[in-house]
Length: 81
Picture 1 (cartoon, one colour):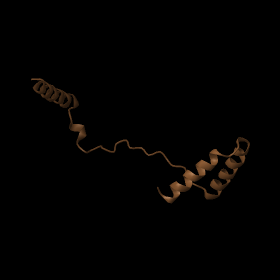
Picture 2 (picture 1 turned 60 degrees about the vertical axis):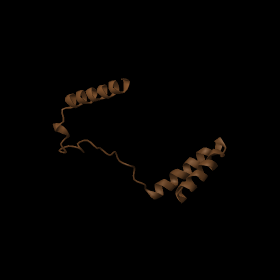
Picture 3 (picture 1 turned 135 degrees about the vertical axis):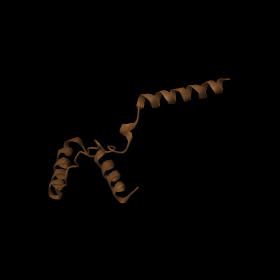
Picture 4 (picture 1 turned 90 degrees about the vertical axis):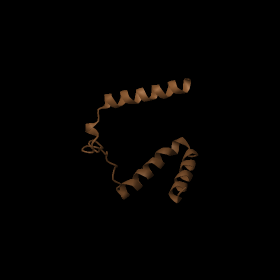
């Protein structure tokens, strides 16, 4: 585990022991630290079109599935005999 991971685990363990009436203070403190750091929110990564132009458009899926099913059926029947 990395040093950061160890620290996070330790902080999580300590957070579990904080009385519920003090959690608002902890939340305010964490928010204060984060506003000073100005952490950018992670954006959404869109993967649409990532395989475009790679040749997958030429596949005939119905034909390929039919061939696979036939091969699988033959293999199963061969084992049963």
